[in-house]
Amino acid sequence: MLTTRELPATEWHKLTTIPPFDQGLPDPAHWRILGVEEDGEIVGICGASDQVHWDPWWIAPDHQGKVGVFRQLVEAGIQMFQTSAVAGVHLTVPNDRPDLQELVERFGFVEAPGKLYLFEIPKER
Image 1 (tube, rainbow, N blue to C red):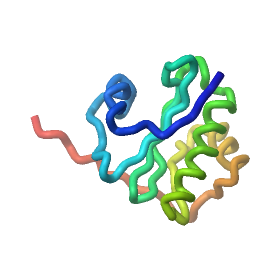
Image 2: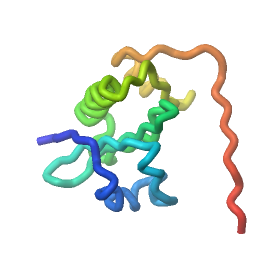
Image 3: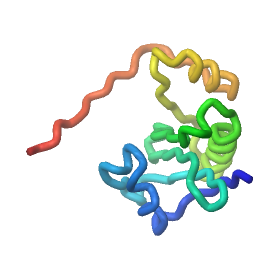
């Protein structure tokens, strides 16, 4: 059975093997993380910063292509945002994944105008 809950920061250490959290954990003062668990094991997560970029998303490989984990993350996320007075969120879906674009549209997301540009800060070595 799948269960969904907001993970308290005291449990974020469980995420350190999941990208991108394997590169470091976010500041809990500015982030909230939802998890979907099956038999106590995390099978999906999504994070939301107070800047309302609803990312990152991760779903265990054996649960990908199934609507259950994604649906639960979306529904729990909407409830979480409603209690925190967030008016809207955005997420990124790759151009080469029309299947994911169709999935998020079925849940009520609409394509935003314009383009999203990213700049990754190079790590000092």
